[in-house]
Image 1 (cartoon, rainbow, N blue to C red):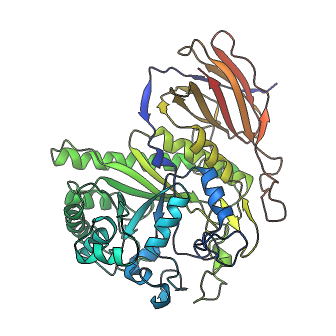
Image 2 (tube, rainbow, N blue to C red; image 1 turned 90 degrees about the horizontal axis):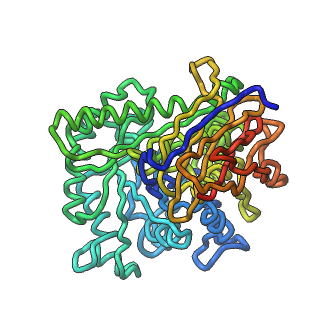
Length: 501
């Protein structure tokens, strides 16, 4: 019997927000083997008529990803999108300065849109506001979304795409505050450019939604002043502000690593407060929502990347091999995003294939699921509906960077149409945690399923040779008795509790 005990009360009256499906988005950048050797490998036995790996498409469908950000990332700040359209044999090979790679432009805008359709996803397109500006932003929207009768829309049709792509979500550049970024700008410079680009893009297509760049991380010196200044310029023209964050366990401090999502929570709260400050200052009735369009664990591959020879096509970059403990942190981050579903409408796990990704491939060989695949797939497929406020009573601990870290990290999502309540929960403790769930608001609740992801070794990984080392298991779950569900969460585990209601 566990010495650790936690309690939750779940009531359908306490609604936070309906989940936007796009909170389960992801990201494909022209970086490493994400495109070449990842989604696109024309010589592969599983390649379809367009050169896309069908086994990878099947895994993306398994993740149920509704939107994919493209083509970057740092890559976009030096990218000429025109190089990736038209006859493939006429496309130039360019130096990608962001990742010191060769970009052959075999896959471009139209090919990616075709791939996204096959993967049951939508494209979230980023425009280059590093080396380019308002005119080019206008032109790409016209090429993608205008029906015809103008130069750029007719060029799309000449390229064999008769109907507009109808891309709805657009990113106004990427991490424009970062010294690593091509065309880095001050907050005032970027804010003015984003405002004017947004204005013209919406003149071309008023139906689009626009994401302005927030800070590239909460630790950068200009945060959150960057957000304030950018929004003071562009508040009326944009719909979302972006957030990016990555975590790692470089010091081998598991307790501190598992608390990382508390930092993510504070980051979101600060950005929300800044957005609402500008709203008040402008006497506006409009709410700016958040696009957390880069988030993940990323640190394993940093040293290996320094050894990669530059100027290759599809070099092995950012190929983190994820552990069981990484999967727990990803689970905590998913729960954190859902706890802010009232403001976080879009989020993108960065990235999708090979590059800090849930899906790995071997060039010409197999594909497999990394450990982080499972929490994302569970949340994306099962946690759709209304996020509920649910008070949690949990024992807590302190770590190097955090105090009062609850051993239980959890969020309930109620899918009324499906008659199901799903509780996502992580036990951060190194011993089992006894959880008592008060389901007073669901008089007909009946327990359905308990899915667990855990492993005796927190450093366990899935590889090409051992793809099923870390996989979910089904556990027995007790009956709901007098409106209460009692369940034991194994030590250091990701849990999905499904209840019929």
